[in-house]
Length: 51
Image (tube, rainbow, N blue to C red; front, side, top):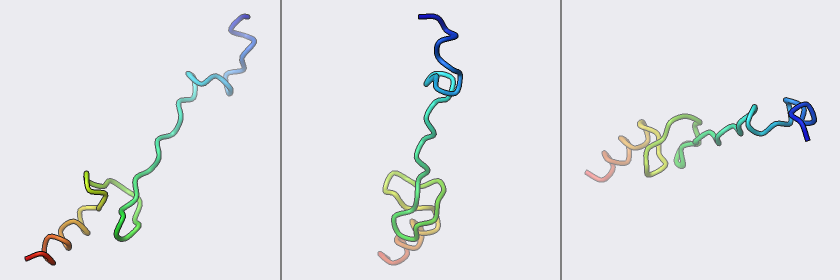
C-alpha cells in the first residue's frame, strides 16, 4: 500500500484528535480547570466557604 492510498483527511497522524475541553464541575464554564475540576473562580469561592 502506498501513501497515496490514504487520503490526508483520513490519516490519523495528519489530523490528531482534538482533546476534550475541560469544564468546571461547579459552574460548567468551559476553560482551564485545576486538578480538582474547578475553575479558579469556583476554587476561590469554595476556599472562602470553608473558612
